[in-house]
Image 1 (cartoon, rainbow, N blue to C red):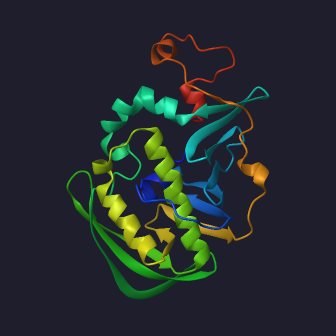
Image 2 (cartoon, rainbow, N blue to C red):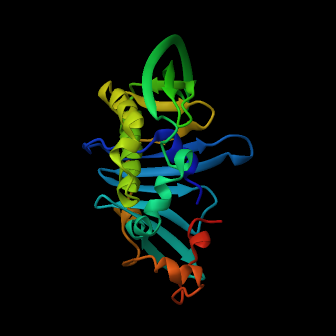
Length: 248
């Protein structure tokens, strides 16, 4: 499952979680050959993220914890992502721009352009986001924002998903300072994201709450095996490899 474009775009946030309603959003992520589609479902603090064409699995936030659900050979497995964080947390800290949200190392500002743009049938205002990336380079990207409550709820759900992923992988607060400030700027002004550069765009949005079964854990969560066993190929019977888990 390739969720990096979405998570990179929307960033990890340490914001406190707030109440929001339910809905289903279809998203376009990435650009060119890397362009993918995804579906985000949310209801309160429960969140599910599916990648189009990835019938074998999805991400799920349940009780503020993040899980990867995989299906292989007719078997459904639920992997506690916190166990992956214990294995790869040190590696994650060294990944620099590969970390979700690391593009915005320092938030500089958000400025209105006076232009309007309609995305997914919703009118939004074009803003210019200025920031410093991980390489110390100042950059500017377009951000199309709307005060539509559905988009505000969607954006909060995405930050909640990212928050759960950050917690699972042990990302430190100082690593997400810039994106945390961006999140506070957006949510504090009751804004939701319609488009961000060429890597993120809302295709459709439905405000109806998904069925509760969509957020239920289909099996008891499992811990990832010891890293040494993975490297030695000693995976428990039925346990997918890391590559299989990530849909590679």
